[in-house]
Figure 1: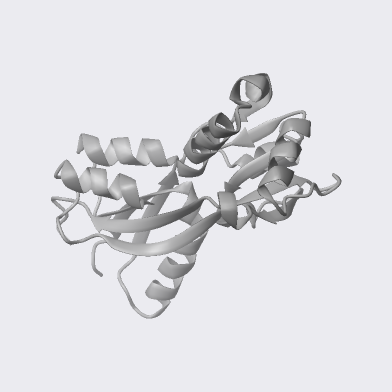
Figure 2 (figure 1 turned 60 degrees about the vertical axis):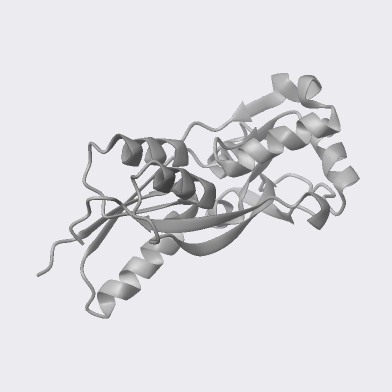
Length: 202
């Protein structure tokens, strides 16, 4: 049997990669082992070069940085997934209006707690709150999920009243309601890509 392909990914692509790996192996492909962790942690581990990874799955910009640093093989990057940022509330909560930019801003201002990730969607939300001029007002109510912790789990536990994260990370979480994706005027879409790690034997 061939040696397993060893990969690392951010949490956003965990489920789709698990499904693809299972389908690949069912067709007789090599075993695949993919560890899913926080995106920042994954990028740092590939950057350090201390572990033997064959492939890395991260936000497109993170793959670009690893490629520029010589940790991902030039020309090996492939864009795989376009993931939209969605809004979630606890299962028993009333659904807020998020149909327009103004409605989302109002929902954020009204929420007793707001959660987002350390990943690309979280960074983009911080910039959006700055642009709206509300970052300082809501700062005491912000709960930033620790790397590798789904925002949906914080919503389900009641720690967060209004959660923002990639839809792919919210759809499998019990105890929450997905309100929907952000309206087009403030959509936060992230492209997730793959790259072959420099030094891979595969």
